[in-house]
Length: 488
Image (cartoon, rainbow, N blue to C red):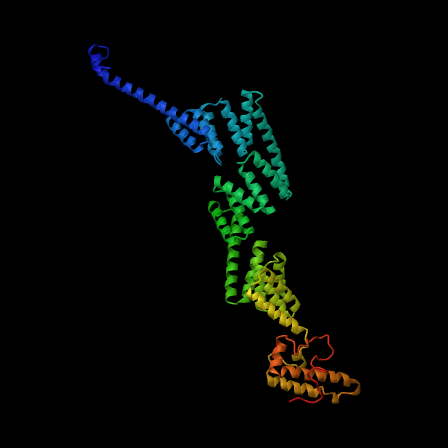
């Protein structure tokens, strides 16, 4: 096209030939853009058919930049969002744009209603389904969606009734059914999480609160329930952080504040109790442990604290309470070796040698190579054996750590006091028996080798010592025959 020639022959005025040229260029650019836009949509449609959702989403978004008022592209992008996890909010936004651009678009109305149903916005969804049925009477999918919606409204009332009656299992089941109809209903998820807290379904609480916080990072109740379930599983430190996060968004939330304070107090008490244990301040440690248990009386938290109580009571010399604390732990966890050992040591100190041996054997069956268990069992068996012997120290009235001089002095005293020659005729036999026991005790305790064997619970001369025998096993026909005379 020769614009100058056209101008010369008078078809266009000379000043107009530049404007005409510019118009032609704009027309070409406009045509090119339209073709490019169509190319993006075609590519996006193909990607969608091939289930390449991210690519389709990007292409539809690019096409909308070129044509921001094309309702069909918004609708197509909404379908992609609905095919992706946790993108229903974005889909709803696109569908609202669709209906703003084309209010009578049937598929847009119906899909908008379905998405509202998914979010539990039932009254709004109901209007969409009714409008869809007005445009297309008898449309089965809209009729079915209306039935689902009405059923959800009924179940909502029933679920609340179960929850108010503290039937958390029943309420949890109904909220699960409701979430199958409206999976993005935030309050249903929070209510189910609350039920799960009461039923002990910790994984469900974590799942539901995570889902809510992903869509609403400021939801204070989600932080509350998530923190509470962390308390249930024994992670107080993480729970405290969660409560703190929730308070940043809602500083006046009463339950969050209370739980944050409790978690911090618990952490402070347990830390201080541990420091007191390391410093062997057992009475102070006991006070902190008891207060900590009162804050969170839940098994995952109290079990290790009760075990610490067991040790602290033992170290503080309160054997009865040590026994109770250890038994409480073992009843909840039969394989708790540390508590078995502490109870064994407590029983050993209380003189319950049979019980101590039983506890050590139980611990050994769980940890056969535990040195503390093996050494404790050996000591308990020695004491068990000695308990079946006559108490020679008691006969002479001396402590177990008595010196040779003390033993000899005690022997002379008791032998003199109990000599049969001093007894009346009717008490002579009893006096002889007692005098013989005094001599037998001195015979063993005055001999370092025999005393060591006796202290170790070993047999002397291969003859077991027992309360069941008459007289002392080393006298009357044994290796030691006593005549009623003093030994020097």
